[in-house]
Length: 118
Length: 111
Image 1 (cartoon, rainbow over the protein chains, first blue to last red):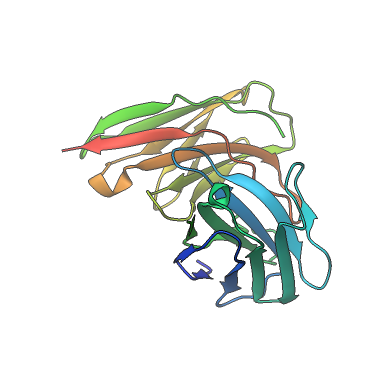
Image 2: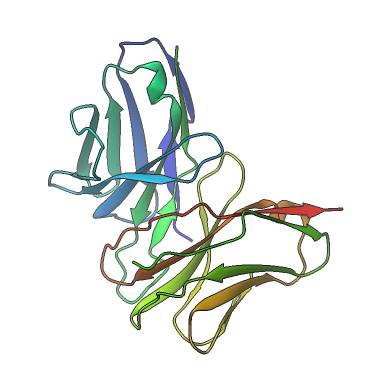
């Protein structure tokens, strides 16, 4: 299947700093990527849909100024957590949509990024 | 998208079949049933999907009832590596449609 990578896999930062997480589709071009966050022992929560060359669409309750998403190319989307605070500590997972018509298995997930804000 | 109901957890003996149920009584005619799983601290992994007919691939089988109000994911010979959270998701398949995850079922495969 298609491969999606994330970098870094783990990051620890101080409160007040900004952290950038990269999501890359390695062997395909993704016009649409999705960002999720997951708290311990909880399910994945969709944060936003990232479309190449346009503004991201955020889910209700997700602060767009807090979680900046940039999808500048067909293989890269970035999520920047601005002015991070301890409550932003979470597991962030991206997924990328494979643009092949008729293929229902069109979403592949990255391995996730563990963010810890001290 | 229709809601799904899954048991919070299940145990299965290694080497035996694991049968994971999912209730989706409000499913509509154009909604597919998808199954993903998430092994601890990893991203979700696609398993299988179906609309009306039963489906089988190298990982699992999906049995959908005739009225489509419920389905069962079958892992024919569970191994310890199949221990994971299994998510049943119902959604309309359309270009770029998003996946919304419920609580899922924690499957523990025991030796």
